[in-house]
Length: 229
Image 1 (tube, one colour):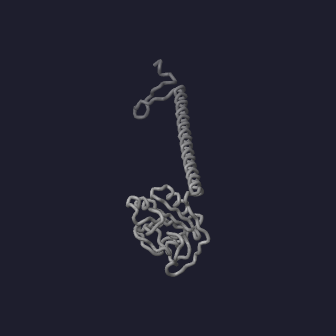
Image 2 (tube, rainbow, N blue to C red):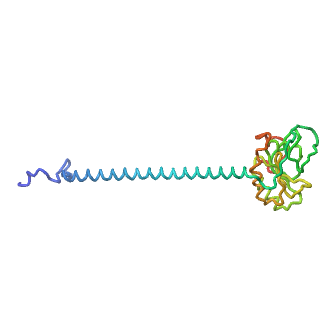
Image 3 (cartoon, rainbow, N blue to C red):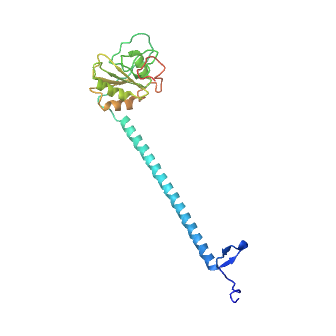
């Protein structure tokens, strides 16, 4: 009986006779403090995750920007520096004519030409000068090689021409060199298909600064490249 008047008991019988636990004021204070600490820890973790995400995104953005800058500088340097051995020709006529044209260069680098351009791509037999010159006017690079060139060398040229929208590759009889790369008013003679200057020439003169009609068609004309489709 003497214990029935205590005001703070930890257990009592609730509805249905189930024993329930009632926290003391001190325990309630400790629980609230623990909840606040957990909430603070969660907030700090979320803040840290966001900071790492922003930092990671920033690093990625900086890396992408640096890659773009390096690529742009490299491309600009490659297209601005002179290529040893390149010969240029000025004051080339650009009239559309019928029939065969006699050209001063072998292969030609410009001049009067046929009304139809040659479709860019890879050919395994010689193509008409007059149509190829029209493609040069549109910004194409014409890579020609001696018919006697070793097949391994020819394959290197095929690999260089693949995927290029404004490149023509074809054999050419009586070339002055094993490989000759031509663009409008510009020509480079090479002794080997492995010469790194070939890639430089393609990069610099495909739709290059000497192009009279940049962006002109290089498909939908005449000729059937073996790599079509």
